[in-house]
Amino acid sequence: MNDRSIHPNTRILIDAWRRMSASPAANAVDDPRVAEHPDLITQLFVVQHSRDTGWRFRTAGQGLSDLLGRDLTHHDFLELWTGPDRFMMAHFMEAVRYDGAPGVIRGRGETLAGQRVEVEITLMPLVRPGAHTDTPRLLGLYQTLGGEPMLGGRPVWRHRISMLVPPDTRTEGRQLRLVASNG
Image (cartoon, rainbow, N blue to C red):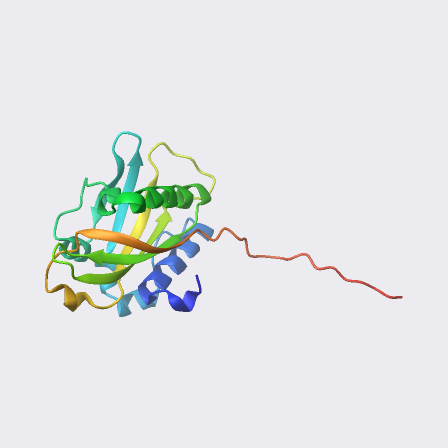
């Protein structure tokens, strides 16, 4: 996904994740842009996977809980999705987990009365690439893309996927160059 097409909060969080992944000793989000986006922290969540219970919310920011109209702790993240979207989301989360890099979901949230809001959800692993654990966790950011007043204060209940942007696992660094000499 082109970095200009993602929400500024998403860009800040992905940049911080990349810095912390490159230098695990730097376990602080010290980006001054965070202060410019106070709603970022309230939209964060952590989900943890287990074979028995699926992808359960361990924590969720108050802004996200308010938007979805319930305390999300211990609820299955996949229950936010219906039908084939639930299966796509489960496989997408496994791709983020397996590839060890962030992925972005674009979609829409809908109230029971049918009001809709566009959403962007970013998921990123909380373990370094290549590390395996029996209880993997993902850090997430749930971001509305405008139109929240259209919900009329009603909670988002159903979600649909519009686009999945899988993890970008390209490595940056030196590139091989071919040089030809005619001499």
